[in-house]
Image (cartoon, rainbow, N blue to C red; front, top):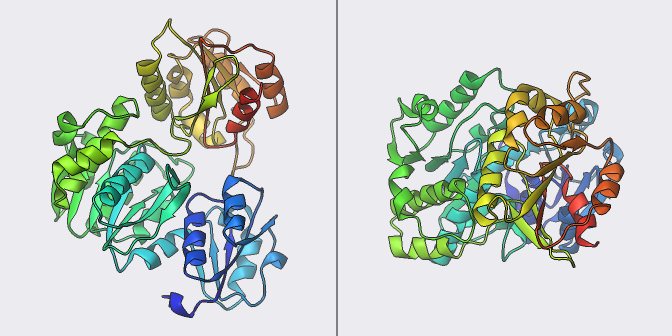
Length: 434
């Protein structure tokens, strides 16, 4: 059911603290609507939304929803852990939309530039956004992080372009009809939903089929090649731009690839190369993507990183070693595995992903939408990692991890990194205040 946003006065968001759905909440606030919402915990995102005028309740139940709301928008995760709440919402007889469905609503009248892929979506989206903003294209942007300089995951512009991060989980990105599609890469992930890599490729193939003008990708990657081989639109090889990437302030081969994809989009949009390169050369990264958070009083450098897949972990550690070569700095990782299913599916890859670290401490698995699986745990993973990183260990709780980390002296020769899609950053908070 299509909705007319101009007739909507009051909106309620279920899971308003999510990085994607919160952007829609910001958009509703900026358009003058009353915004209400709920989430299971308070966060930096919910606090900022409250400062902007949203009314947010901590908790999750039907009674928190005002009876006079005109629209309910929900995070797709709610379907899994509270189906009874969703049933009650659908019985309200008002429009109800998921976050991915709302992406269609807000992007359908724009030239949508959708950035998809297993890794690199957020950074590539932010890089494209910076190029378009710096060259006065005045785009709208939704990104799965906070943009530096804006402290927001949303930019509302008056230009024709809408740059949006497109997530493959549960085929969410099929709600978008992009004019330009970026595929950064494709690997097996989200195997709690997809059957296998072939199933993931099928989803990407569908997205390619509904793309209007061009697909930016690496067509020589055999996994990607199967997705784009029947495309009826222009295929642009971003690897042809790799040697033209300017010196970046964000390290790592993966970021240079992200920048190459951004340059390819800019070229297709007829943005002069020099202007696009200048914009990339001053790109400062995004929130929780190898973000340098500060330095302790004794000189240890503290980072936070969202990496939660083995490929991402390796890329982040390679980037850190560009900055801090082995032997010059000791790198300590505090990692929170994300989902039992992902930890189990990629167990062997996780076991070797931390090899460039000097020490690794594992927090309990962040299980999110899943039921516990006794066959996999942080303790079991720590034993496997210890074969390559001696002394790798697991903590049974956040408190134990915090007590252990604050009992170790981190000084000028140390780099301390919290890593994962959950709440590992909280340990960094403690270390920074030592």
